[in-house]
Image (cartoon, rainbow, N blue to C red; front, side, top):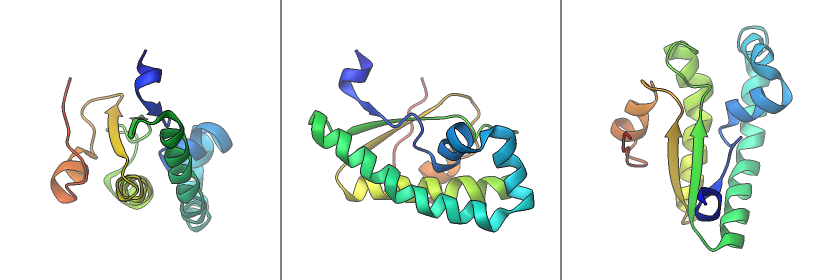
Length: 132
C-alpha cells in the first residue's frame, strides 16, 4: 500500500546510490580516502539523474510525495567531516531539486540518532522532521 502512495527513491541519496549499487560500502568508504575528488565528481554527476527520476515517477503516479529512506548517513558510520563533505552536500542538492520541482521529499531515517537531522531541520529548513 505504501508503494501506491509514495514514489520511493530507494537508492536516491547519492552516497547510498553509489555505495549500494556501483562501488559497495567498502568501495565507497575507501574512495573517501583514496580518491575523494573522483567520488565528489561522481556524486555531482548522479544527483541530477536522481532528481529526474523522482520527477518522472511522481509525474507518472500523480502524487508529488517522494519517500527517501536513508541509511549510509547513520551516526558513527561517517565522521562529521565526511558527512558534511560527501553526504550532506549531495543530499541537500537532491532535496532542493525535488522541492524546486514541486515535489515533497519525505525523509525516512532507518536509524536514530541521525546526524543530518540538524542540517535538514535547523540549518537549511528544507523539510520538516517527524519522529515516529
